[in-house]
Amino acid sequence: MAFLKLYRNKLQENYNYLDQLFKERNINWGVVSKLLCGNVIYLEELIKLGVTEIHDSRISNLKKIKKLNPKIQTVYIKPPSKRNIEKIVKYADISFNTEIYTIQLLSEEAKRQNKTHGIIIMIEMGDLREGVLGEELLSFYEQVFSLPNVEIRGIGTNLNCLSGVMPTQDKLIQLSLYKQLIEAKFNVIIPWVSGGTSVAVPLLLKNARPMAVNHFRIGEALFFAKNLFTGETFENMHNDVFKLYAEIIEITEKPNNPIGELGENVAGNTYEIDENVDLSATSLRAILDFGLLDMQPQYLSATDESITIIDSSSDMTVIDISNSKNKYNIGDLVSFDLQYMGALYLLNSDYIEKVVE
Image (cartoon, rainbow, N blue to C red; front, side, top):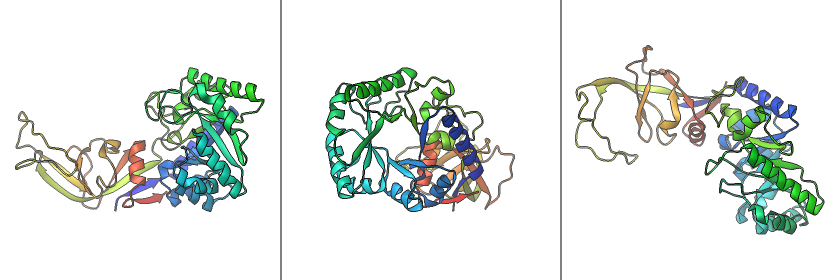
């Protein structure tokens, strides 16, 4: 069985770096755990880091977190659905909201559970996913801030999640102005201005954050140390917290081109033969014990850079090891570096073992 390995020390070092970065700037932050897909082994590792606030978009994952440590502040990071209101109040201390009707339901349910549920009002700022329109924000706030058993903990926005709109300094200044407008009109204090996710970290490093923006939700930067503006790895951080290891189950010298009448493969693709290539050419191919049921190959790259991924079927992946200096044998492990989406697929697969080192 192929397995995904989390390197504990690298994750801890990434966390320590980010925690210091935020503390030096008096910023609150929470870890976004949705990548882990509720895997209890990895959630335990997350809590061991010293995390006090965890964000997720699946209520079942927040339930597991509360079972592991009831003291963790849990945040549900998408607008709640009507049928999940009871569970959200039970397992999420705070939720992101964009609909007055939904907040009314949360208020009623929180009263039934004898709780005060925290609300973050999400504002639309150009990425065109969830969010209250800016021109409607004051009217929206007026209708919800006095509801019983809910507390408006802050405002926030999501950028770079749907349309790729980046969190520039101007965007965060605009978000800060919304805070000022609400506080001035209603004579209240807005504790959190949640300025976004990992994509905003470069602004912090350049000290380009408006001071009013005092909260961030961080996932990809913690697990992959990726600067989403440049695609590079942040200095002093690790981009290989996760690695995939797969076992070689066949090694054979085979033709480079398929032989026979061609149709669609299992993924719906049709192989096209280049008539200009040597049709008699062969390569040393190895088959690995994972496939499309577990991941998408475009999000993986072999640690041995001389290896090429040829393609995957539902439960096997074929690689070309012809140019490798390593002499691979049946049963050997081949390791892969992962992009965020690659890890997400693997973590969501029950067929990939999850281990920690």
